[in-house]
Amino acid sequence: MTATQFDALAKVINVDDLMGRCMGNLDFVERILTIFQSRCEEDLAALEEAIQAVDLPRVQQLAHRLKGACANAGANNLSARASELWTAANKEFTDVLAARCAQFRLEWNECTAILSGDESHESHNSLAATP
Amino acid sequence: MHVLVVDDDVVSAEFLANTLVHFGYEVTVANNGREAFHLIRSGKYSMVISDWEMPEMNGPELCRQIRCRQWSGYIFFILITSYGAEHVVEGLKAGADDFLTKPFQPSELRVRLRTGERILSLQSRDVMLFTLAKLAESRDTDTGLHLERMREYCRILSEELSTWDKYRDVVDGDYVQLMYLTSPLHDIGKVGIPDSVLLKPGPLTKEEFEIMKRHVTIGGETLAAATKAHPDAKFLSMARDIAFTHHERYDGAGYPFGLQGKQIPLCGRLTALSDVYDALRSQRVYKPKFSHEKARQIILDGMGTQFDPDVVEAFLRREEEIVRISESLDGSTEEPPAVLPELPLMTPEPALV
Image 1: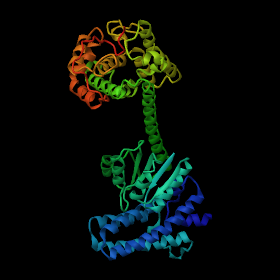
Image 2 (image 1 turned 90 degrees about the horizontal axis):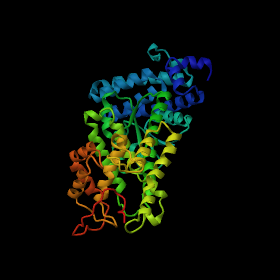
Image 3 (image 1 turned 180 degrees about the horizontal axis):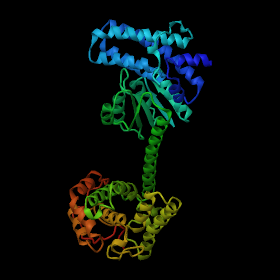
Image 4 (image 1 turned 135 degrees about the vertical axis):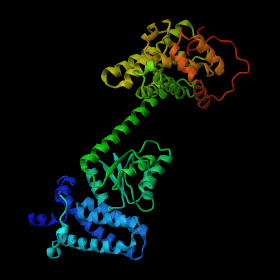
């Protein structure tokens, strides 16, 4: 990973935190981010289906898992979004779930674009990772 | 050491597995509680790190299932959660030993693992000590569950003293635990007594009794050598004191040193009464099993002469529990004789000719 790629990454991932938790092992950082991308994409698709089906237990489970996975990958803003989704599902605020999930999807797509090296999607300041 | 990681979130599981491997552990990953429980039954894992929220069986339920069953060794269980502190109580109730919050820091994980290893090593120490004592006892087939009862009596008596003001600075929870742990080693020196004396099916001659008495110095000196090598190990020094002094008498007429009153370490005074009570309540080739009432009377007769009056008082205050232990851990299979001969017995050693 080049320095430029790392700078771009820092907009969506708290790189210092992730590097620290990966004990400075760059290979491990890359592996985590690869797994993060593929697994969260699957979970997000399943979450969208669960929201459509108003399957609240499933929404809770998936939102909780996304929250943990994003936090582990250092994607703190996405983790916060997933946490909001989880809270809404917990409190049965079904009317806000679709909108919050759409917001998560938007930010997720921008995050994955950066992770994939396609920064044309990246435009939102809201993506900046909390240091 | 094998660690089982249980997490349905592959990112978190990968993080844990990689960090654990980096710290030198062998790791297996399970994706839910049910799969983990199946793996744990192999007996391969003494440490489990589990996520809280998982499909099929969640972390607390997995922990409860583990605690419900008897395993060959303790399983140290760490729960990982991104929930708040309010879940700690629920996790503790399920039997979790420790917690990690997502996302965890490797340094924190390492500290938690070391705590687990420390606890597991204490278990190994306790098991080894008791195994050693049982090995020594195995030559003497006359004693049934003597060690199991002894350590319970010692625990009860020291627990009682821990509630007295005068023992507040001497006997605490740690002391009680050490008594329970080390009292089974009191007769460890019997490994050095020849079969012809130890297993003699009848009264001992004076010379044989002198040989039998050597078990206290054999055991005491062995444990003293271990204490010298590990001076900070409190359990070794207590075990040494117990081995040396559990045949001392409060009036100074005991052996091997003829110590008197408070010169005898408290652990020795506690073990002395426990040992005699158990011998009185057990059948031997040279005596029948005495009733609790008869044993109690003999203990009372020895108050201030053979036994420390405080220890006798503790015995009387916790009498019901002691009787319960005596009956629930009765390893004898033979019925006591219908008529109990009046045999004086002031030491748990075979009667002298």
